[in-house]
Image 1 (cartoon, rainbow, N blue to C red):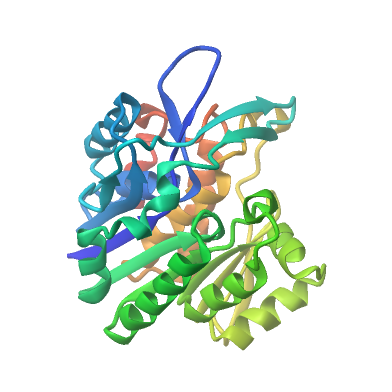
Image 2: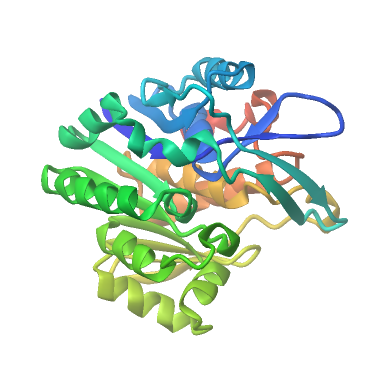
Length: 310
């Protein structure tokens, strides 16, 4: 059985309707990937830290219900998950207000999570997925330890998948450029949003994105361009894969579009489908997710898509 573990932070959403909602880039990908590959012999785990509070217990219970392997989750006494509030404009674009400066997830790697360490030390048909946000919430010492562990993980056959999600406010003057370069040098597959790349490297050249990925030795790179076609290249071939076109009135919330795309892509790619077919599936899922509010849509809203991904 293949194993993929996503590392990062999930937060609670404070919403006027009072419903229990949550989200986080790597968690969104883990959850959607779990839904799409239940019969494909892929175990999807989530690695993070939560608190010992009621909300944390609810999160773990919900993840288990979705089929996510929670053995990699650590609960830390006197810590709590981060929280966020959202404003959505008439075009479906969102702005966020966060309360996460002292969230439990920031202390995950320092809490010596045993199951996570075992996963990295003994990879068997295993994949590790993380993002720029995963790096931003991790202190410099823990990042160095993670990169070292990932080098060993790769040397034993593990594969590394990186999404460049960039949130400047989370770095607060820290050396994000070095961290991103290290992450890209480890990545076998990289999901890069063009606007994030422009911000990270202060370079608005699309060709620069490709040249950097080649320089770092990334085997497979997918460049996401919002509503435009994504560009995919594997070192030898480079081509565009069109998005699924929607009318403006169909777009409700673009928050988790990139996370859903990654899940759709990996649900095919990890099982031998071509890059092009995998990207098409990524676009299909992303197009469905952005037609509903929130990062996580209910299963019924995507049930007709799930057989197409299996």
